Length: 540
Image (cartoon, rainbow, N blue to C red; front, side, top):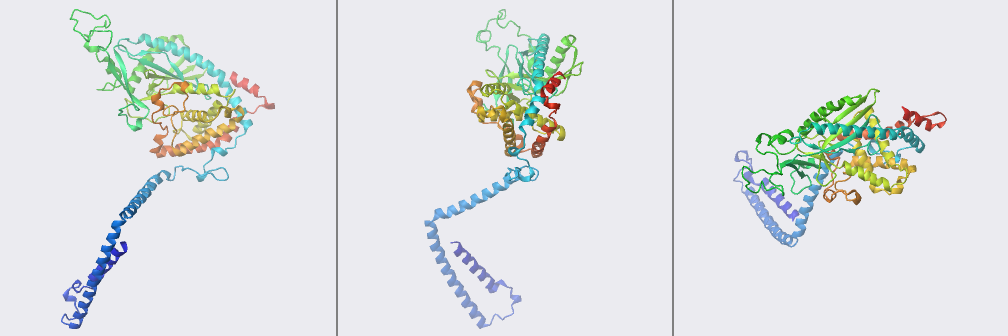
């Protein structure tokens, strides 16, 4: 078929080029009256006519054959279109491998990877140096963390009690007992100043209640870039109380409801709570408004009890009013992060205004749902199944130490301790309990670094709770969170190429410097007197 069409085109082109009318008459050099020339032209025209008839016959026969093999013809067009689509897709995906970013490397014989990067699997780590480093550098934090937790719990109780006393129970939120989360309460904090993270849940006064809109709800209008978030709607429940009839029947003007003993006639206070805590012209809680209210309340509460303490309390960050710094006269510093939160009904998940691993969000009404309590419980549950003196926390402490030192050398990156802890929890769920023996510290450290390296290369680190069916049933995570789509903590890196390049560079430098940093910061005592060093570090 294609050959016949090509021959037709050639014949037509030849006929056009050889036709006498193609050239103007004024350019004719041979007289038109020349009979010999006219005869030859007529003969040539007859040959062209015969050739055209022959080709038309071939085309008609070819059409019949194409009719019988139509599927093959359409198949050819289909595979041509598919090839074009595949080529276009490859070209688009190739943009992810531009210079400055790290492609999936193929390891070479020397243990490195393409592009001069370092492979975590071939990292040279000395078991003796690792053991000495952990004993001398991390052991002193164990006893100190216990004392710090005891102080923080007592101080937080006192501060919250003072905060409750200054709140108007008819207008302000009602505070509940705090929940300790984070590295100090999970026993893996290894840097100073010690930082304690507290979640302080608050609830609404009557007759208000919260209604929650989750990203995984049906239907949901939460944007895709705000996965793991939700909105909190403040609503009134007056008139819907099952024990009250004042909203269902006309009791008369002189009748008083004994349940709703407050007068509803004061319309000036009807929207006081919405104006205090909600975004303008909406019923959704505003993160900025809540944090502003919390800062004012904490400042007033500290003013009531400051005379009882002999230390200085300051706000570290005005953007996060619960970020406090306690400075004693001796110069010792304790960092305290008190985060107001809203507990999701019938769960241990809390809506918080900010989250350690996310990028800044411009949405004031979308709150991050924190699963830190479930993560703490998962870490405790897994520890019960591990061998005595298991090396899982040592691995996390070592990686956090390397990350902190590398940050001091080359500056901050998007990598956080929360990412490191998430990677460890994934390894705990995937590896057998016996593999976490103390003697396997160097191997598990390579595994943890390798897991992080692979996650960076793939730009994917899944949330440890959300969408993870491997979480043990003993943790009692609601089914709706285990069965929903997993959340990728590295999702922002897909679009933020400079942030990703900086993060990869930071991690590669950390791998490259790891043996030197561990060797350099391992104390060397005469005669190998490690216990003397431990006592000295504890006393300091």
